[in-house]
Length: 153
Image (cartoon, rainbow, N blue to C red; front, side, top):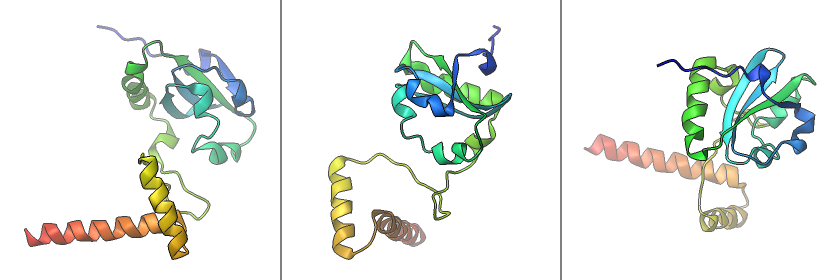
């Protein structure tokens, strides 16, 4: 069986600055700088995803030549599979690098219940620290505990 790989340069695209005009559709998207594919991602709502993308600041610093191209996906259940295959094929350089915050630390993204987030925020306020620092402390303590349990086995 033969599979044709899409050419991102032929897809609809907008400049990074025009991201507010992106369509509200499920899509695999490509971040392009000229002919180079910098990053590939997938989302169920392209317009929403680019209102607050984790690579936004990094991409803005790269200059005005950055474009967003997209391949609309009529079957959102296939997004991850298509995205993974395209990343494997094109191997964009930013898909292989962590996202760094302003403090130089790697940004960890995770989904938690709103009640957990609220509890974390309240505890951070009570302790006079940030949610980020408290989360790092909690994770460090939990990992140490797991490591100790492993040693005891």
